Image 1: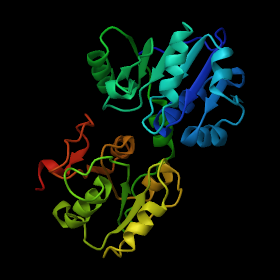
Image 2: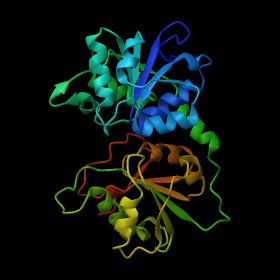
Image 3: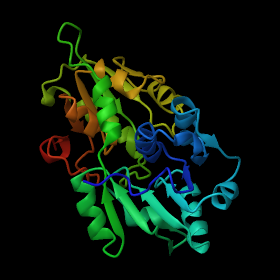
Image 4: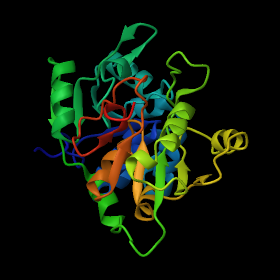
Length: 298
């Protein structure tokens, strides 16, 4: 396993991100770089909130243009929630700048780099585990692929306590916007919740178990509180802003769809369930430690 493929002491580096996944991974390795105060950053959305909170000493710039003008290398996340990372890669390639994208997941690799049917790839890809390396090499056979240590996972596990058997068991549900309804007139994320609650006892989880929904960083908690007002789910509540490590620490079980948080939960020793229903797409997380409900609960 190689270190991050940049000498931050000698290179002029700018980092650009919007989505939380890439921002968390990038923040985790930046914390281990002594010279990070000189690194230029342009961020929006969840990435800006994460970096302002965890790395306020970074050199935050006011525009993407400023980031491109003051760097020889551009490092990006790979976002779905906006076009920022895509624009950064496209602009940097037009300027013949070296571009490195950190992939924080295991699905939809090629689609992350397409907007309006135009594919724009970075010059290099960085991944954080062997599963992602295999998928990246298959998806981008002509690009340089570097695998670094998953520092974000390391940091999360260092903060997560063991399951506390003295407390009442609870289930943490990691929500995420699905963008599909699988032919049913209801957003996919709400179908997942119905399917999960309906099948708790088949998982040997008591039906009255307290369930906390943790919204995705791109979602407003009101999305779920408003939906719950019209449901008969008294044991289900919304988790407002608790850090991921704290939320997993207080949970006995963790469910979700294809969230990176399921990987963290499974690594922490919890039973982690992908609650995608049988009529949905197959769960694309490659980790065998994650239990896929759709494989055995129809």
